[in-house]
Image 1 (cartoon, helix red, strand yellow):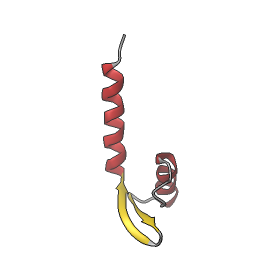
Image 2: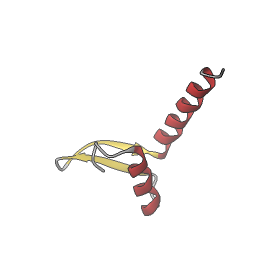
Image 3: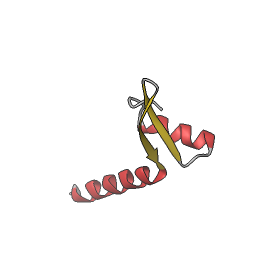
Length: 55
């Protein structure tokens, strides 16, 4: 997937292909990997932030 892709695009690609990780490629060169665990961490941070902003 391209580094400029959104999180949603990455999640959709992984789901459609039934894979747990996705290479991040820029100009034909591997620049990283995104995994299901990355999404779990992102979700956890969002939940923590939401809890801190309760009224």
